[in-house]
Image (tube, rainbow, N blue to C red; front, side):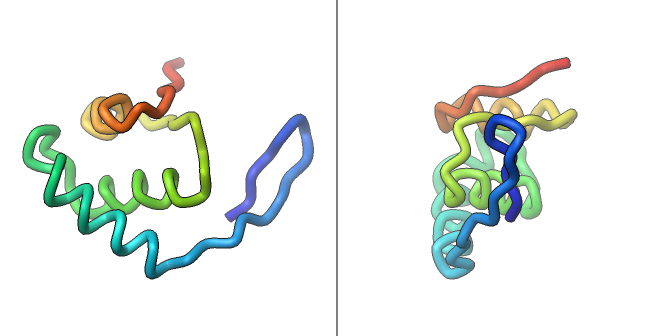
Length: 76
C-alpha cells in the first residue's frame, strides 16, 4: 500500500493474514449494524491494519462503519 505523508509516498508493509482476521472480526461485530458488504469490511480492515487514522468513501455505510471504528471520515 502506498501512503502520502506531507507530499511523500511510502510503501506500507501489510500482513494479509492480519487483514483477513480483522475483516472476519469486523464482520461478526459490526456488519449487520451498518449493512456493510464483504468488500466494504475488507476495505476498512485494510485501512486499520496499515495504521490509517482517516478514511474516505462515497459510500455512506462504509463511512458510518469507519466512524464507529473511531476513524476520521473525510467528506467532500
